[in-house]
Image 1 (cartoon, rainbow, N blue to C red):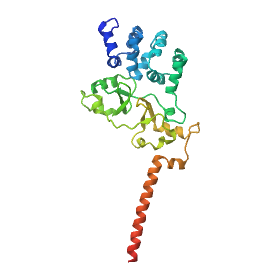
Image 2 (spheres, rainbow, N blue to C red; image 1 turned 90 degrees about the horizontal axis):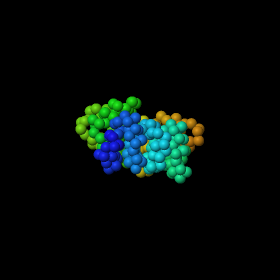
Image 3 (cartoon, helix red, strand yellow; image 1 turned 120 degrees about the horizontal axis):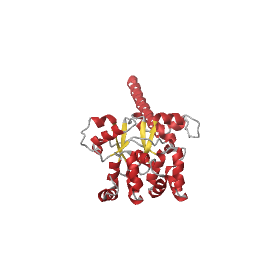
Image 4 (cartoon, helix red, strand yellow; image 1 turned 180 degrees about the horizontal axis):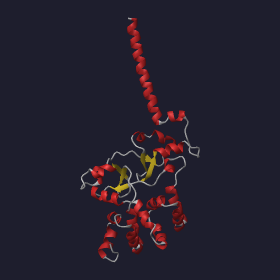
Length: 280
């Protein structure tokens, strides 16, 4: 895709999401070279629409001058996606490019209370857009350098979580189908602002060892691993850990307590009935 081609420029301007899907399959260095030549008003919407991992890979190849201008043109939600996946040193460099106002806005979006689920966030997740075919998804998976997880999260153009697909299903499903047609829609997730002390009773842990984490608007921001959750809540690192009585009185505890009381009542009635029969 050449910038000096009028059709290419028109495509980038009019269809930034579709352009992002195309560029996600182009080598990082070629995409970075393209962006370095694009006006900000054209490049920013396209980069914002790209999947986070690809956007970060390209961002790291941008010239400092272009990166400094680009971060000021990105919506804060898109900037947050980039920031979370950058190494600490690169995060510091990004913050230098921002004004005090923009830096404060970003910090409000990426900072979570230490007692919330967001404080335990792992921002690295495998995700794919819902509007590509199974064949396209397989190509992306095969071209990726890292090994995909057993479950791949599916998002829409606004990066909101829509569903999940087990990795094996990509290779057994009809290659012409769209991912939205084969994904499991009822996906259990963790709101980032949930209190960490209630996370161990989340029903999703019964069938999964990793759950997606979302913002209030449903945007996927990462995941939480069950092993890490157990490990963290067991440490005295400032994280609030509830005592056994408080755990018992959590939603999960209340359920089991109510069930136990119900069973006890049933057994009590049965014992009373047997007692009456014996008297007769």
